[in-house]
Length: 448
Image (cartoon, rainbow, N blue to C red; front, side):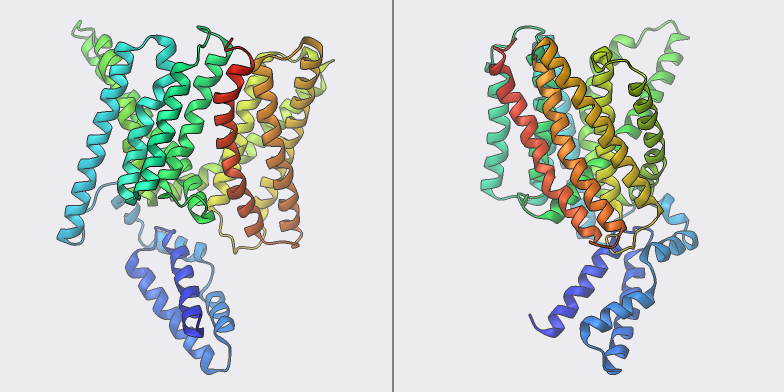
């Protein structure tokens, strides 16, 4: 690569990072890039090499987070404009936007009809096993269309969903048995990674695309939660208004509004993340900073509760299940905060808080593993115990190495990129584990 090409690559990387701070418009970024190039040119004339000139110029430009906050304060009206769909800049852009909206609405209606058909024709056990198969293929189809994936990737997506459908519907599960419930819980997790393959356009080996998928997942959860809250409030007000007229609309809500709303929201939330990332990028990092210290307090309180228990055998099974859910929440906070962090920024207070979170979760995980191993040794193994034990081992590996890398980062022995790379490299392990649970655990326990 030539010197000019290397410099251009550095500038493109810098511009790409700045573009993630949506308080700064494209015109602002163009202006900032012009200033950056002027500084680089002046530094080159002063005798600095291209790499040195680039680094010094970026440093003198100031922290992007600080610049972003300044732009947000100066242009506060942009946040509200981002909440609505603005007209496209050109006719081609407007045509493409309308086309995408049509595709999204079509897929949302398709997912809603599929879910309604599943509710109508499938019994409760089969519906629980197949609910993710009724909705997630439409979401994967949206990303496959948007990313214009090739034939091999499209075939892989189809094969993945078909294999999942065969496993979930041909396995002779015992009705209401533990393995059936386990498969119903883990199938959506495994299939979410199939959606991730479509989101990445088939380029799942790319660390950047995996990190983008982590970021998308966090933002999608936020949008889906907002849609669910808004829909719940609207349905409550509507039901209240009709009840004053002695008209019962609850059957309509249960039979039509809820299935269509739930399935459609899955697709619409993904489209909103793609189209309007800027608002959530402002909100989601704030949520992680609020809930991280609160989660630490919860974990420490639970550790104290464990310490006051006379024996790990006395720990309630329900508590162990809730602890697993809390550890999954910790993982989500860890992943999303990493995806939203500036990898070039020096260690700060929140990095130390996050390390406390990881160490606290690690301590809880070790206590839970001890409790599960003791229970298995005392009472024997069951599908639930084996799955919970395996999941905690998978989490343990992630937390141990995350803590080690976090300590190294705070002590200046390694960069933040090592911690980010570890999370993206380890991400497929969760999908593989979920798929293994669905495929292997039921036969091991005779589908009971």
